[in-house]
Each structure stands twice: as structure tokens, then as C-alpha cells.
Image 1: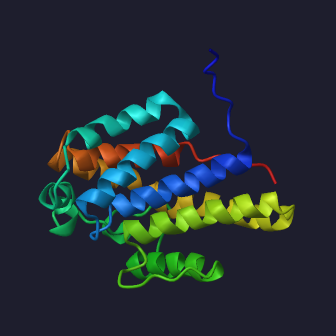
Image 2: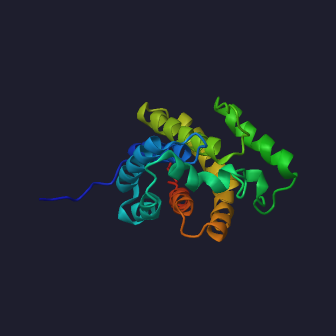
Image 3: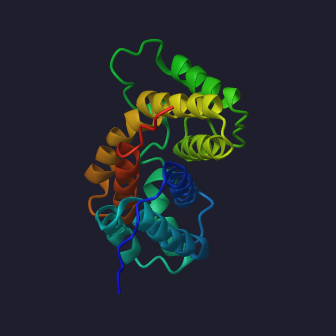
Length: 209
């Protein structure tokens, strides 16, 4: 039997990527609970398997091996973020080279991205990793639907925003977050999850207009 899996189209890849970012946001949310985390991790494995093959999926092994089948175990892997040992906020880390203006500029720039696409954040600062991931998911989904609907100009607007947001914000501080987690919680489920996210962000598709 032929088990070769065809590569997804650009539109399919964008929708898969949108779902993956959304699932990572769910797993990093302080509202995560064991049953939801187990289901999200299972779905994330399936999505990444379709998106990027076995290499990236193997990064989920440590995360799944933690055995978070109870609420206390689920909260355990999030404890460094929930208790403030590791900051989940972009502005807690060094900005990318060449950026001036400090925290106020970074926050204003992030908020500008959100306003441009009608994205609203409730109950959290805009530079928290969860809304940043949700926004990345939104951009991927909007670009995919613009392409499906035959709207190349709309697709390019979304693609350019996605490239800039990843370069200037989410993709710029993820390596620092990953390093901080690796130093404080090496080999942990949280470290494995952020490594998955790092690999996902590094493989952002440079879609043509």
C-alpha cells in the first residue's frame, strides 16, 4: 500500500499553520486544563505531521511524555510562566537589533498590528505570548482565505503583515524565551513545547503574491 503523503498546497499549509499556532496558544494559556491539554497536544501532533513531517513531530515526545492526565500535572508544566519565574511577555526580553524606543514603542507597534486586522486582546497585555500566537494564527487564516477567494491583493497584505510580525515580534523573541526555559527547566514539557513553536516559526512559508 502506498503511504506517501502529498505536500499540502499553500492554502492548506497556511490553514494548518494557523491551527498549529492556535493549539500552541491553547497549551500555553493559564486556562489550560488536563483534558483540554491532552486533546490539544494530540491534535497538534496530527497537524504538525501533516505540515512538517516526522522531524518536527518528534519534538512533541517530551511534552507528551510528561503524563499530564490530571489538572495538577497540567499546571505543573506551566508553573514557570504562571509564577513569573520565566516571563511570557515580549517586552521582558531584549528587542531585536536596531530597535529603539523601548517597551512603549514595542507595545504600540504590536497594538498597531492588532488594530490593522481587527484583533482584540482581552484580559492580557498585547505582548503576551498567547495573544501573539493567536494573532499569528489569524494572519495565516486570513491569507489562506484571501487566496481561496481569489483576492491576491488581500493575500499579499496578510502575507506581508505575517512576515513583518514574525520578524519584528514573535519570531524575534522566541529564541530568548526558549533559552530562558532551557536554562531553568531543561528537558521539561514546557521546553519541548517552545522548541516545537520555534521550529514552526522558523519554517514560516514565504508565500508568493
